[in-house]
Length: 111
Image (cartoon, rainbow, N blue to C red):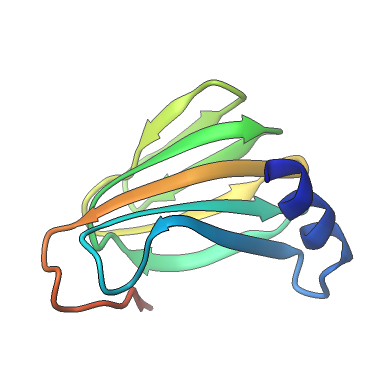
């Protein structure tokens, strides 16, 4: 799936592709494979609960107001509370896992 999403991201005008593999907006737990072309930044979002990024391919940077963390294949990054963004330093794919703390919201908030 990571390979498929990477191919889709490279072909996409916005340089991103994603597919939810488990759960969804109506569930507490959601897992999504996200791919981004090198140089693309996923805009700033409010962490919807407890979340992690598991890097499958490439190199990403997780950014918050206070710090940033680089992730390479096999790295598990914990998404900080509050606002965060993700930047692809190379063509990259990662598994985004979130357990929403408020299951009723069903949506991400972005700035």
